[in-house]
Amino acid sequence: MTTHIATVAGIAVDTRHWIGGARVASATTFTDESPIDGRVLAEIARGGQVEADAAVAAAREAFPGWAATPRQERAALLRAVAEGVEKRLEDLAIIETTDNGALLRSHRRGVMPRVAHNFRFFADWLDGLGHDDFDTRGHTNHVSWDPAGPCVLITPWNAPLMLATWKVAPALAAGNTVVLKPAEWSPLTASLLADIAAEAGLPAGVLNVVQGYGAEAGAALVAHPDVRRISFTGSVPTARRIAQAAAANLVPASFELGGKSPLLVFADADLDLAVDLAVEQYDNAGQVCLAATRLLVESSIAEEFTRRFTARAQALVQGDPRDEATDLGPNIHPRQLDKIDGFVQRALAAGARAVIGGERGDGLYYRPTLLTDVAQDSEIVQEEVFGPVLTLQTFDTEDEAILLANDTRFGLAATVATGERDRAERVTARLVAGTVWVNCFFVRDLRAPFGGSRESGVGREGGTWSFDFYCDLKNTVTAPKGWQDHG
Ligand code: NAI
Ligand code: MG
Image (cartoon, rainbow, N blue to C red; front, side):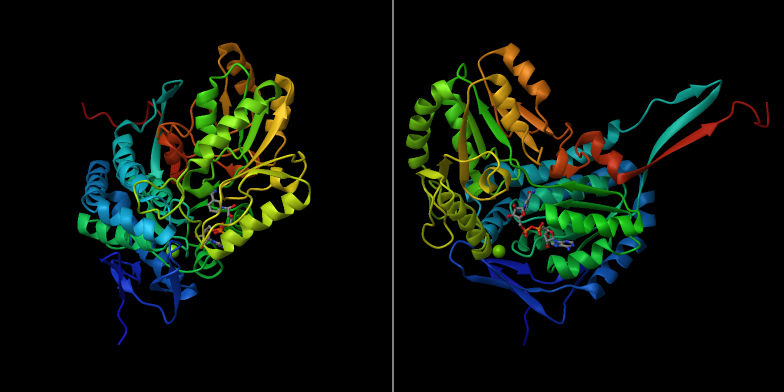
C-alpha cells in the first residue's frame, strides 16, 4: 500500500502535487532528505510534462474567476492565508528546518513571520495601487493594473517558503493564478502552503504546487505556451535556460540570482560594528544570495579587524539547527558541500591562506572559513560559493575600494562600513548593486525595489515594482465628446 502522507517531526505532510484543488500523485517519486542527519524524510511526487500541463491548465481555468474577483475579496483571502501561516507557524518552522537545515530560531522569529507578512503586505498594497489619470487636450488617460494570467514561480532551497511567498503573494494579489515549483531539496513547506491556502478558502486552481526536478517539472513549466509570467530565484546557469524558454514564448521573466557582494570597511568605521556585519555573513551557513562574501578592509586596520573577526567567528556555535544556541547549521546537500569544499581547496592550492576554517566538519557541516592572499581575478573572489566562506582583501584608497567592489559580474548588494557621511555618499553613488546598506545589513522593506544588477538579476520586485511585473498595464484614453446627452 502506498501512503502519500509523510510524517516529518511528528507533522503530516502530503507528498503529492496540488493541482486544481486536488492532491495528485505521480508515477514516480524522488527522495527528500534532511541535511541535519541525512535521514530520508519523504518520497515526493516527481512531476514532469504531464503534471506541468495539468497545473497550467488548472491555473488557466481558474484565471477568469480570480481575475474578476474584486480586489477587496482577493485581499481578504490573502489575509486569511497570512492567518493560516501564523496558526501553523511552529509546524512550518520545524519542517523547514528539518528539510533545509537552516536555524529553527530564525524560522520561528524571522522567516515564518515574514511569510505571513508577505501575504498581508501585498494584500494591503492593493489599496494604494493606482495611477493619477492624465489629461490630453480634454481626453483622460486612465491606467489600470490588469492581471496577466497564469504565472510560473520557480524557487530555491536556501529560504524556501519565504522566497516562494515573496512571489506567490503579489502574483495572487494582482489577480493572477499561480503554479509554484519549489526546489527538490526542500519541497515540504510548499505542500503545507497548499493546505493553508485551501483552508483559507482560495478557490481551486488559483494556487497550484508541482513538485519535481528542475530539468523535468521546472523545464516543462517554463516552456508552457499558456504561461504569462515567469519569476525565478536561483542560479545564473538555470536563469539562462529559463530566459531561453521565456524568449521562445515572449513571456516576461523576472530573475533574482546570485551574488558576490562586497563589505567595504573603512578605517573610520566603528570597528565592532564592522566585525559584527562581517560575522553575520555566515548566517544560514553562507547560503544567502545577498551575503557580503568579499570583505574589503582598509589596510591600516586590517590586522586589528582580522584579530577581532577571528575571535568572534571562532566563538560561533556550529551544530544542530534545532538547538537555540546554534549559530551555524549544516549545508543543504552533499553535492553543495562538495561544491563548497572544491572552491576552498582550489583557492588554497592557488596560494590562499585560511585564517580560519578551510575544511569540512562532520556530516554536512562546513567550518566557517576566511581566506586571505587571494587574487582579484581568482575563482574564489569571482564565483559564488554559497557556503560559509569569506575572502579578505585590503585596499589603501577609496578609489581602490570601489574598483575592487565593482570588479565582479554580479551586482546584487553591497555593504559599506564608515563613520563619515560624506564618504558614505561618495561611495554608495559609485557602487553597482540593487541594494546598498550603510552601517547595517539585511534591513528589508517590502515597499522598496529588490533585485540585482548585471548577472545578479533582471528586473525588480517589491511594492509597486512587483505589480509592475505581475500586471498587464492598460491605458484607456477617453474622448470628452461623443456621449449621448440624455439631459
Ligand atoms: P538552481 O538554480 O538549479 O535551482 C533553483 C530552482 O530552479 C529549483 O527549484 C530547481 O528545481 C529549478 N530548476 C533547475 N533547472 C531548471 C530548469 N531547467 N528549468 C526550470 N527550473 C529549473 O540552483 P541549485 O543547483 O540548487 O544551486 C546551485 C547554485 O545556485 C548554488 O550553489 C548557489 O550558488 C546558487 N543559488 C542561488 C540562489 C539565490 O538565492 N540567488 C538560491 C539557490 C542557489
Ligand atoms: Mg530536504
